[in-house]
Image (cartoon, rainbow, N blue to C red):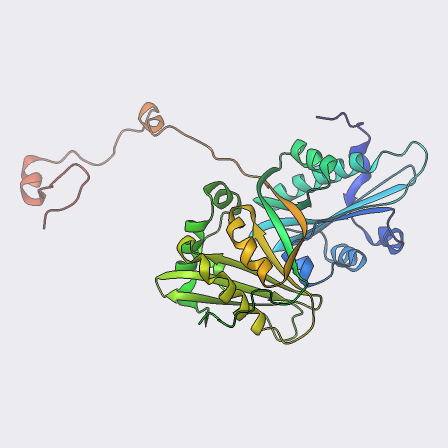
Length: 351
């Protein structure tokens, strides 16, 4: 662990209205950690900081600010809908003077304060989608306890449909009854370490109820029988772009092109279209590329748990002294009246 001066503790705080003037200028350096929501809707650091200053940093959004020797730095994180999680989305630095700490040093301390804040707010997991070219920042996250659970390729629709096919999958809109089948398909195609990091439950696949004025809209479709799906497709649309994510059964990979064609048929504007593919979905790269998608970046998906599993021996209660039972000892006559035969020690009544 790198050595950090003790006076760093006193200069880091949640953003206040007095800090906002410093954020109006263009940052000297900034790292955007693009997740699905940020691709769909641009992240405005000043307005986000204003929102945090007005309502206070919470489990749904947080902005931490630091200042020392003319250097001002900031970290921002956004919450996930209905989940105790935060996504780190921005690291930035402004100005700087002689004797000021380096950007990675001040960001390290800011992130450390953010993790402590998240733990106090009952946030269970923090995520970061870090570009593969930021080797120094990846080491910084590692020292803070983040681990890489998957790598992700960001692909953007750049050209025509090179496959020149016309088949379109007969998908249907996702309904409430499909969430367990989607979760079962997710468990089939997703490695267990990824499942443990994302901690998804079947209810997490339910579509959010977004009002018509909301700037980001999410739609989803499924392919296959109600209890045995072979494909799942989600389309997140915002003012900046459309983002596609999908799950395809290993035995139905030939359906990938038809599934993507169906998705593109649901888009009626000229906004950029992105597709996000994990490293364990590498077999989908070729059919996605045949439709005109080209890779534009690689990301390391990082996760930090703020909770730990507490193990306790099941024999511990037997070793602890217990108070004497106060119930009267049954007599033979009472046993004769209330006795019931049992088939095994587990206590199941015979029928």
